[in-house]
Length: 87
Image 1: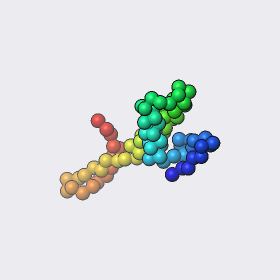
Image 2: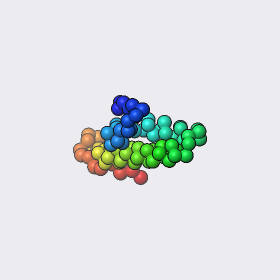
Image 3: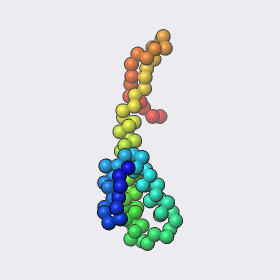
Image 4: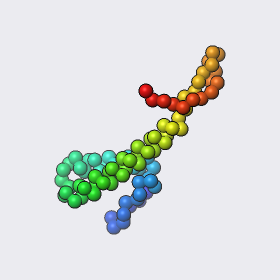
C-alpha cells in the first residue's frame, strides 16, 4: 500500500492498485456522507473521489478487455477463445 504523510500530496491515482484506489474512494464517500466536512474540504474530497472513480473505471474496462470467453467444441473440449461481451 502507498503510504501518505499529512504534509504530502496524495499519490496520483494511476500509481494506486485498483484495491487501494477503491479503498480510498470508499473513505472519501464515508467522509462526505457524514456531512461534517467544511465546504472547501468537501470540494477537494469530491475532486479526488472523481479522479479515483475514473481510475477504477479505467482499470475495470482494461480488465474486461483482457477477458476472453472460451469456445467449446462438440466434444466439450475448448477449441478457441473470443472476446467477452457483456449483454
